[in-house]
Every structure is written in structure tokens, then in C-alpha cells.
Image (cartoon, rainbow, N blue to C red; front, side, top):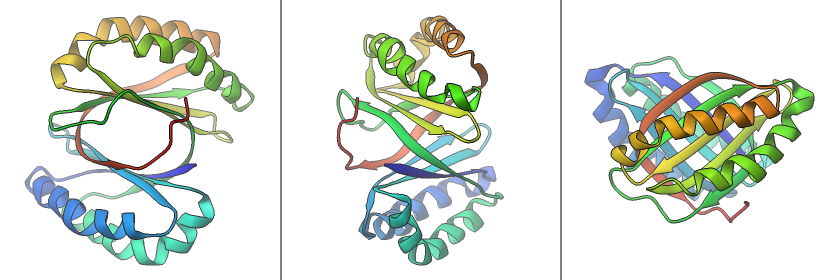
Length: 206
């Protein structure tokens, strides 16, 4: 499975209108496309940073659907008032304990590794990091996306609430440091977001 993420910084006064447009116009059209298996929208209401991610069965599925999806996606970017940055990923790991509900939040970690260490990072995530994450109170789901040629690894963990996410910060940092050290990785950024939208129909991969 693959994912295409679009990141932008929305103008604060346009954030709510943009979220509503993605929910009412973009999501139905995207989910109706052949090969689409999910859409999520992460929002940081303070900075205005938004990350929309659409999951696809294959890159071919995305390319076939792109002409249908692009106009509404461009309109969403216009409404939000930011310049989109688009990236493509392989979904390497996906594990859900239960579906998310209103109030869910997500911690996302960007890690840089040498391209020849990506597979090792994936295995470390499965074998060491994911079992620890599953023990966190309020854990909902986790995913790992990778860009093999660039050596980028991105982990996203969904919690039932902001409080559950906040209470795991110190523990998550310790676990993250141990695992990235094993893969000779460098944590580039850690972000915390509200899960504004989520509709996934993907199989268990962990």
C-alpha cells in the first residue's frame, strides 16, 4: 500500500472552512475512487499546519484517480490559504487496536536514516517500538510510512485524547531514542496534531 500526503500551513481564519470542505467535498470524491483505501487529516490549530494523507492500494491507483482528485484537492489548498508540499510514501506498518473517535490526537515523528537502513528501521519498529507503543494508555493505532530512496521514516501514533497523548511524551521519547539509535537514525521533527478527519478501510498489517 502507498500513501500521498499533502502538507500546508493554513491561515487561521480559513482553517475551519478548509476542514469542512475536505470533509464534505474532497473526502467523498477521493474515497469513491477505485483503489482508495482511506483518508486522514491532521491539524495543528495553533500553527495552522495541516497534513492530509490519502492511502491507495498502489501507485497506479493514485495515478489513474489523480485527474478526478486534483481539482478538489487544489480547491482545498486555496481555501486553507497555504502552499501544498506533496510527498509519496510506502505504508510499511499499520496496526489498529480500535477505531478513533472524536477528540483523538496524533503524535507524528519524522526520522532520517541512511537509505540502506530503512528496512532495518522497519524491523526495529515492528519488533521493538510497536510493542512498547501498544502499552501506552489511550493507544488507538500506529502506522509507519517510508520513503526508501530518501531515507525518511515517519511514525504516527493515534491516541483517544489529547490527555492520553500528553501523558506519554516522556516515555515515548525514551523508547524513540532507543529504537532510532539501533537504526542509526536521527529524529528530524516531532509533531502533535488533532485528528480532524479519519476514514480508513485498510487491512491489519502489523
